[in-house]
Amino acid sequence: MQLDQLTPEDFEALRGQTLALEAPAARIVCTLIEVRRLPAHGLRTAPPFALTLRGPLTPVLAQGTYRLDHPVHGPLALFAVPIGPDAEGMRYEVTFN
Image 1 (cartoon, rainbow, N blue to C red):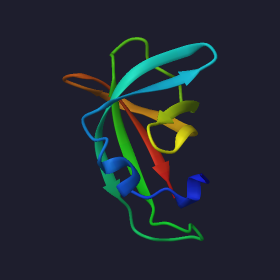
Image 2: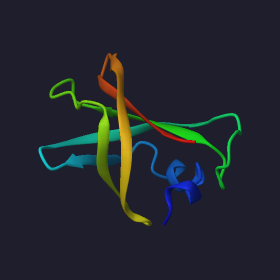
Image 3: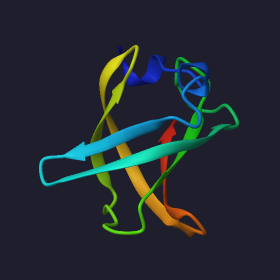
C-alpha cells in the first residue's frame, strides 16, 4: 500500500497495542498512544494525520526512517521523530501529510 493512501482509521484500531520501530542498527517496541487528525492541505489522497508512539526512555532513536510492521498493510517505511519524554517513556511522532 502507498503511504499516501493510509488513513487514520488504518491505525485507530491499533491504539494501545505494541508496534516495533526497526532499522538495521536499532529496534524498539513502542505503544501507539494517539492517532491525531490534521488540517487538510497539499495533494495527499487521504486526510493527513499523525501518530504518537511511546517507547522506552533508552535507547532514544534519532529521527529517521524506520520499518513498522502493520498487521494488515504489512511493512511500512515511516519517518519517526522523537518529540520528548513523558512520565512513561520517550514519545515519537510519525506524520502522514
